[in-house]
Length: 134
Image 1 (tube, rainbow, N blue to C red):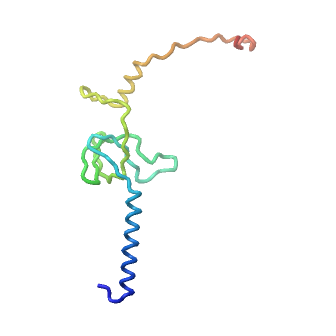
Image 2: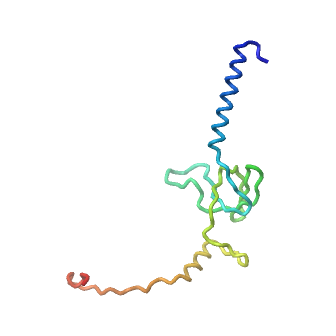
Image 3: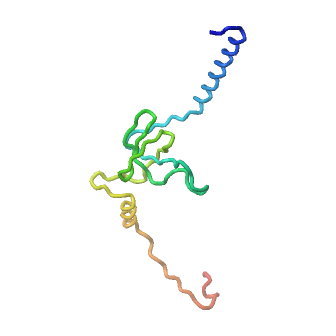
């Protein structure tokens, strides 16, 4: 209980100030929609140097969500962090339910199905004028 009028004024000013700070913090808060099965990148704790990416480029799969704590797994390694350490990504390929192939195998198999153009042989002459286009 305030003892004097001055203390009461200070308490009221403090409440208004805290209310204003809460409103500003809520405006800037980001809501993240992460659920089990999503693929995410993990933010690195410390960067080794300024050229290093802030997120580990190898994705993790979310296995458990408890309020703001996320458990994710990659190569049988589980990590649990706050939601702010994760960035949701869209996978560039569909995972096959029948066969569990790795990302490298997927891209290797995808490249085998690409038709690259035939290599064109261009004759090269000793005389530079003969090499000019007609």
